[in-house]
Image 1 (cartoon, rainbow, N blue to C red):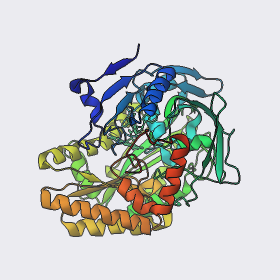
Image 2: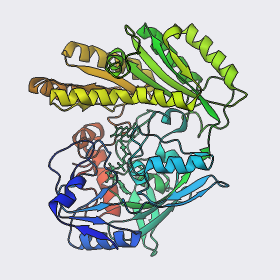
Image 3: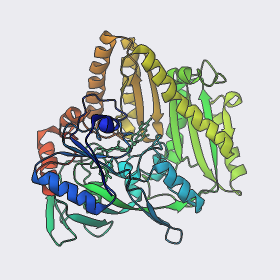
Image 4: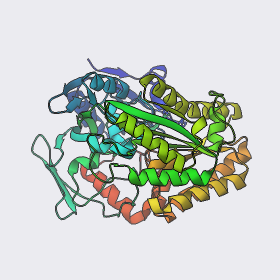
Amino acid sequence: MMKVRTQLDELQNYLTDASNMPGGFAEKLFIPESAAEIADILREAGGRNIPVTISGARTGTVGGAIPFGGYVVSLERLNKIVKIDKATMTAVVEPGVVLADFQKAVEAEGLFYPPDPTEWSCQIGGTVATNASGSRSFKYGATREFVTGLKVVLADGAVLNLKRGTAFSSDGKEVEVVTESGRQIRARVPSYQRPDVRKNVSGYYNAEPLDAIDLFVGSEGTLGVITEIELNLLTKPEGFFSGIVFFERYDDLLAFVDEVRSLSFNSRKAPVATAPGSDLDASLIEYFDDRALGFISEKFPETPSGMAGAIFFEQETTAESEDVLLEKWNEFLEKHQADLDRSWFTTTEQDREKMRAFRHALPVSVNERVVRNKQKKIGTDMAVPDENFPAFLKFYKKTLEASGIDYVIFGHIGDCHLHANLLPKDDEEAERSRHLYGRFIAQAIMLGGTISAEHGIGKLKSKYLNVMMGERYLNEMAELKKAFDPNGILGRGNMFG
Ligand SMILES: Cc1cc2nc3c(=O)[nH]c(=O)nc-3n(C[C@H](O)[C@H](O)[C@H](O)COP(=O)(O)OP(=O)(O)OC[C@H]3O[C@@H](n4cnc5c(N)ncnc54)[C@H](O)[C@@H]3O)c2cc1C
C-alpha cells in the first residue's frame, strides 16, 4: 500500500541532497510501490498543475532531487532486482535498487557492472537519470553505455517502453515514440553540437541518429519517471593489478598519464573492451595533486612527502597475464621516473580495498576542513577536449595559486576531467571562490569543454547551462521537454532554472 506523508518531520529527509542546497519544501511525499501508483500520482498532479520532484537516494550534488513546492515521489520501495540473467549477461531492476547491492548481486553471479560513482549508496534509477560515471568510466564508459531498456511513466501517466536500437530519430531531427496505449509522441531533437569531450552531462543528449532511449538517460527527472531498467553486464574480471604511484616531478606525471591514456583500450575507441590481453590497458587513471596528498596524509601518514602528485591506476588481469603485466608496468613507470621505491602495488582484493580507502580519504579530509572553516566547499566538474586539457590544468593551477585560497585538484585525469575544490576560510574568500568558479566555467567553455562532466546541472548549475548553451539551444531543450511534459510539472527547476 502506497505511503503518503505530509508532516514536516516526515518530509525533512526528502528536502535536501548531497548539495546541501537550502530552502527545499514540499506539500506531500509519496512512496509508491508500483509504476501504476506513480501514474496515478502524476495524473492527479498534472490535473492540478502541481510540480513533482523525483527522489532517488539524494546523493546527487546539484540539488536535482530537492523539491521547491509540490509533490515528492520517492522510489525507495521500487527496489526489486527483477532478474540477473547469466546466459544473456543482462539484468532487469527497479529504479530504487541501491547500486552497491546490485553490484554485489551481479558479482555473485560471476558478472560485472562497471559504472561506479564514488558514492555507492545511490539508486540505479538515480544513476540512469544523471548518466552517472566515475573512475572506471575511462575504460568502460558511463551508465548510458549499459542501459538497453527503460520503462518510463510520463507526466500524464502514460507509459513508454523503450528498447535500445528500436526507435531512432528520422534525418537526425525528430524522434517518435509510442506509448503503451498507442499514443504517438513526436519530439524535435536539439540541434546543438556536443562538445568533443570524453564525458558530458550538460543538457539533453543528442546524436545523429538519436536513439530515443538516450533522451531519458541523463534527463535529470525532467522527462519522465524511470520505473524499470534493463542493463547489459560484463564478465567479472579474473583479477586486477592496481598501483598508487608517486612522482617527484609534475611534468613526468603528466607525460605518464598522456602515454597511458593513449595506450589504453578505452570506451572512446570501441564499445566496451573485451578480454584483457597482456598489453598496458588501464581501466582507471585517477590523479591527486600535491595538496590532495597533504590532505590524505592526515589519514594515511605513510603517504610520502615532497611529491608533486600521484596517480592511482588499475588494469584487469588473468592468471596468465599477471606476471607479464607487472613487469611491463614496472618498466613503463621507470621510463617516466615514478618514485618506484615509495609507490604501492597490489593484485589482492584486500590491498585494493586499502587503495580505495586512500582515494576515499581525500573527500573525507576535505569535508572535515570544510566543517572547521564553517564555509561551503566550491567544487568544479568541467571537462575539456583532450588537446586542451594541459592548458586548462595550467589555468586551474595558476589561478588557484594566485588566489591564496586553499584548494585541492584531483579526479578522473584519464578522462581529462578533474575536480578542483576551493575551501574558503571566510566570507571574503567565499565570495572570491564563487567568482573564480565563474572564471573556470568561462575558460572551460572557451576551450570547447562542458560545464558538467558527471554531476549534472540540477538546480545549482542551471545559470551556467544558460551560458554554455545560449538562448537558442535552451529553447530547443525546452521544446523537447514540452513534447513529453507539456505543463512542465516534472523536475521543475532542473536544468532550466
Ligand atoms: C561523495 C560523492 C561522490 C560522487 N561521485 C560521483 C562520481 O564520481 N560520478 C558521478 O557521476 N556522480 C557522483 N556523485 C553524484 C551522483 O550523481 C549520484 O551519486 C547518483 O548518480 C545519483 O543517484 P541518487 O539515487 O542519489 O539520485 P538523486 O540524487 O536522488 O537524484 C538525482 C537526479 O535524478 C532524478 N531521479 C532520481 N531517480 C529517478 C528516476 N527513477 N526517474 C527519473 N528521475 C530520477 C532526480 O529527480 C534528480 O534530478 C557523487 C556524489 C557524492 C555524494
